[in-house]
Image (cartoon, rainbow, N blue to C red; front, side, top):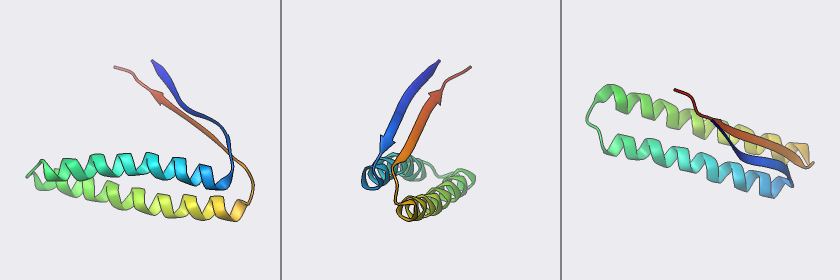
Length: 81
């Protein structure tokens, strides 16, 4: 099953806003996982994911700001068993 989450062309400000909000949802997910577990391995995994997402967000913002053009965003969720 596929869900088309985002599809379109956005100006730089809107593109940054959309991507930032999407990444913040994922960051919050991992923060909640850390709060709800005492398993050290799970905590380290989530911390690694958080650091990577934060780094990706910085890089994405820089890329969009440097491009100075409209940004095409395609985002699809693919579900399978």
